[in-house]
Length: 196
Image (tube, rainbow, N blue to C red; front, side, top):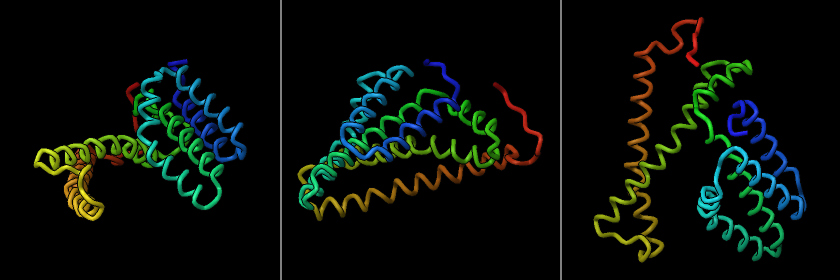
Protein backbone atom coordinates (compact mmCIF):
# COMPACT_ATOMS: atom_id res chain seq x y z
CA UNK A 1 0.00 0.00 0.00
CA UNK A 2 3.05 2.26 0.15
CA UNK A 3 3.06 2.73 -3.64
CA UNK A 4 -0.54 3.87 -3.99
CA UNK A 5 -1.58 6.00 -6.91
CA UNK A 6 -1.43 9.69 -5.89
CA UNK A 7 -5.11 10.09 -6.83
CA UNK A 8 -5.98 7.37 -4.33
CA UNK A 9 -3.95 9.14 -1.64
CA UNK A 10 -5.67 12.44 -2.37
CA UNK A 11 -9.08 10.75 -2.24
CA UNK A 12 -8.14 9.05 1.05
CA UNK A 13 -7.16 12.40 2.57
CA UNK A 14 -10.37 13.96 1.27
CA UNK A 15 -12.51 11.14 2.72
CA UNK A 16 -10.78 11.16 6.13
CA UNK A 17 -10.91 14.93 6.51
CA UNK A 18 -14.52 15.10 5.30
CA UNK A 19 -15.53 12.32 7.67
CA UNK A 20 -13.89 14.16 10.55
CA UNK A 21 -16.09 17.16 9.80
CA UNK A 22 -19.25 15.05 9.49
CA UNK A 23 -18.93 12.82 12.56
CA UNK A 24 -20.52 14.47 15.57
CA UNK A 25 -19.96 12.13 18.53
CA UNK A 26 -16.66 11.64 20.36
CA UNK A 27 -16.62 7.84 20.05
CA UNK A 28 -16.97 8.06 16.27
CA UNK A 29 -14.19 10.66 16.11
CA UNK A 30 -11.86 8.50 18.19
CA UNK A 31 -12.61 5.54 15.91
CA UNK A 32 -11.87 7.73 12.88
CA UNK A 33 -8.62 8.85 14.52
CA UNK A 34 -7.67 5.19 14.89
CA UNK A 35 -8.52 4.52 11.23
CA UNK A 36 -6.39 7.52 10.25
CA UNK A 37 -3.42 6.20 12.24
CA UNK A 38 -3.79 2.76 10.64
CA UNK A 39 -3.95 4.32 7.15
CA UNK A 40 -0.83 6.34 7.91
CA UNK A 41 1.01 3.26 9.08
CA UNK A 42 -0.05 1.39 5.94
CA UNK A 43 1.26 4.11 3.60
CA UNK A 44 4.59 4.18 5.41
CA UNK A 45 4.33 6.97 8.00
CA UNK A 46 5.88 5.71 11.23
CA UNK A 47 4.49 6.13 14.73
CA UNK A 48 7.31 8.53 15.71
CA UNK A 49 6.43 10.93 12.90
CA UNK A 50 2.76 10.76 13.86
CA UNK A 51 3.68 11.59 17.46
CA UNK A 52 5.82 14.56 16.36
CA UNK A 53 2.96 15.90 14.29
CA UNK A 54 0.49 15.58 17.17
CA UNK A 55 2.94 17.21 19.60
CA UNK A 56 3.27 20.17 17.27
CA UNK A 57 -0.43 21.03 17.74
CA UNK A 58 -0.86 20.04 21.40
CA UNK A 59 -0.72 23.66 22.59
CA UNK A 60 -3.50 24.66 20.21
CA UNK A 61 -5.63 21.69 21.29
CA UNK A 62 -5.15 22.49 24.99
CA UNK A 63 -6.02 26.12 24.30
CA UNK A 64 -9.23 25.07 22.53
CA UNK A 65 -10.21 22.74 25.35
CA UNK A 66 -9.62 25.46 27.98
CA UNK A 67 -11.65 28.01 26.00
CA UNK A 68 -14.50 25.54 25.63
CA UNK A 69 -14.32 24.62 29.32
CA UNK A 70 -14.62 28.29 30.24
CA UNK A 71 -17.63 28.52 27.92
CA UNK A 72 -19.17 25.50 29.66
CA UNK A 73 -18.74 23.08 26.75
CA UNK A 74 -15.70 20.95 27.57
CA UNK A 75 -16.87 18.04 25.41
CA UNK A 76 -16.95 20.30 22.37
CA UNK A 77 -13.33 21.29 23.05
CA UNK A 78 -12.26 17.65 23.18
CA UNK A 79 -14.14 16.99 19.93
CA UNK A 80 -12.40 19.94 18.27
CA UNK A 81 -9.02 18.64 19.45
CA UNK A 82 -9.65 15.13 18.09
CA UNK A 83 -10.93 16.64 14.84
CA UNK A 84 -7.74 18.71 14.50
CA UNK A 85 -5.62 15.60 15.10
CA UNK A 86 -7.47 13.76 12.33
CA UNK A 87 -7.03 16.66 9.89
CA UNK A 88 -3.33 17.09 10.62
CA UNK A 89 -2.55 13.38 10.56
CA UNK A 90 -4.52 12.74 7.37
CA UNK A 91 -2.50 15.48 5.64
CA UNK A 92 0.65 13.44 6.36
CA UNK A 93 -0.51 10.95 3.73
CA UNK A 94 0.26 13.54 1.06
CA UNK A 95 3.88 13.74 2.20
CA UNK A 96 4.51 10.08 1.32
CA UNK A 97 4.75 10.78 -2.42
CA UNK A 98 6.63 13.08 -4.74
CA UNK A 99 5.11 16.37 -5.76
CA UNK A 100 5.64 15.53 -9.44
CA UNK A 101 3.37 12.51 -9.05
CA UNK A 102 0.64 14.65 -7.50
CA UNK A 103 0.99 17.18 -10.30
CA UNK A 104 0.52 14.49 -12.95
CA UNK A 105 -2.38 13.02 -10.99
CA UNK A 106 -4.17 16.38 -10.88
CA UNK A 107 -3.61 16.88 -14.61
CA UNK A 108 -4.98 13.37 -15.28
CA UNK A 109 -8.06 14.36 -13.30
CA UNK A 110 -8.61 17.09 -15.95
CA UNK A 111 -7.47 19.97 -13.78
CA UNK A 112 -5.79 22.74 -15.80
CA UNK A 113 -2.02 22.41 -15.60
CA UNK A 114 -1.52 25.98 -14.38
CA UNK A 115 -3.86 25.47 -11.42
CA UNK A 116 -2.37 22.06 -10.58
CA UNK A 117 1.13 23.53 -10.70
CA UNK A 118 0.16 26.38 -8.38
CA UNK A 119 -1.30 23.90 -5.86
CA UNK A 120 1.86 21.78 -5.89
CA UNK A 121 4.06 24.87 -5.68
CA UNK A 122 2.10 25.99 -2.62
CA UNK A 123 2.56 22.59 -0.98
CA UNK A 124 6.32 22.88 -1.52
CA UNK A 125 6.40 26.47 -0.29
CA UNK A 126 5.14 25.80 3.26
CA UNK A 127 8.06 23.61 4.40
CA UNK A 128 10.49 26.24 3.03
CA UNK A 129 8.63 28.95 4.93
CA UNK A 130 8.81 26.87 8.10
CA UNK A 131 12.56 26.38 7.72
CA UNK A 132 13.02 30.10 7.20
CA UNK A 133 10.97 30.86 10.31
CA UNK A 134 13.11 28.43 12.32
CA UNK A 135 16.29 30.08 11.03
CA UNK A 136 15.04 33.50 12.11
CA UNK A 137 13.98 32.10 15.49
CA UNK A 138 17.43 30.55 16.03
CA UNK A 139 19.18 33.75 14.97
CA UNK A 140 17.16 35.70 17.56
CA UNK A 141 18.17 33.15 20.21
CA UNK A 142 21.83 33.40 19.16
CA UNK A 143 21.68 37.15 19.81
CA UNK A 144 20.95 36.36 23.44
CA UNK A 145 17.19 36.90 23.49
CA UNK A 146 15.37 34.29 25.54
CA UNK A 147 11.83 34.15 24.22
CA UNK A 148 10.72 31.76 26.95
CA UNK A 149 11.51 34.24 29.71
CA UNK A 150 10.16 37.30 27.88
CA UNK A 151 6.89 38.88 28.94
CA UNK A 152 3.85 38.77 26.68
CA UNK A 153 4.42 42.33 25.42
CA UNK A 154 8.07 41.60 24.65
CA UNK A 155 7.12 38.39 22.84
CA UNK A 156 4.61 40.23 20.66
CA UNK A 157 7.21 42.90 19.87
CA UNK A 158 9.86 40.27 19.04
CA UNK A 159 7.50 38.21 16.88
CA UNK A 160 6.56 41.34 14.93
CA UNK A 161 10.25 41.95 14.30
CA UNK A 162 10.74 38.30 13.30
CA UNK A 163 7.94 38.49 10.72
CA UNK A 164 9.79 41.03 8.58
CA UNK A 165 12.73 38.79 7.54
CA UNK A 166 10.40 35.81 7.13
CA UNK A 167 8.09 37.74 4.80
CA UNK A 168 10.94 39.35 2.88
CA UNK A 169 12.53 35.93 2.37
CA UNK A 170 9.20 34.52 1.21
CA UNK A 171 8.71 37.38 -1.25
CA UNK A 172 12.27 36.97 -2.56
CA UNK A 173 11.69 33.23 -3.04
CA UNK A 174 8.39 33.90 -4.85
CA UNK A 175 10.11 36.47 -7.10
CA UNK A 176 12.94 34.04 -7.93
CA UNK A 177 10.43 31.30 -8.70
CA UNK A 178 8.41 33.55 -11.00
CA UNK A 179 11.54 34.66 -12.87
CA UNK A 180 12.63 31.04 -13.28
CA UNK A 181 9.17 30.06 -14.55
CA UNK A 182 9.17 32.87 -17.11
CA UNK A 183 12.71 32.03 -18.22
CA UNK A 184 11.70 28.41 -18.82
CA UNK A 185 8.65 29.41 -20.83
CA UNK A 186 5.88 28.42 -18.42
CA UNK A 187 2.57 28.26 -20.36
CA UNK A 188 4.30 29.11 -23.64
CA UNK A 189 2.77 26.16 -25.50
CA UNK A 190 -0.46 24.22 -25.22
CA UNK A 191 1.16 20.86 -26.03
CA UNK A 192 2.85 19.81 -22.83
CA UNK A 193 4.97 16.68 -22.41
CA UNK A 194 5.75 14.91 -19.15
CA UNK A 195 8.71 12.86 -17.96
CA UNK A 196 7.46 10.09 -15.70
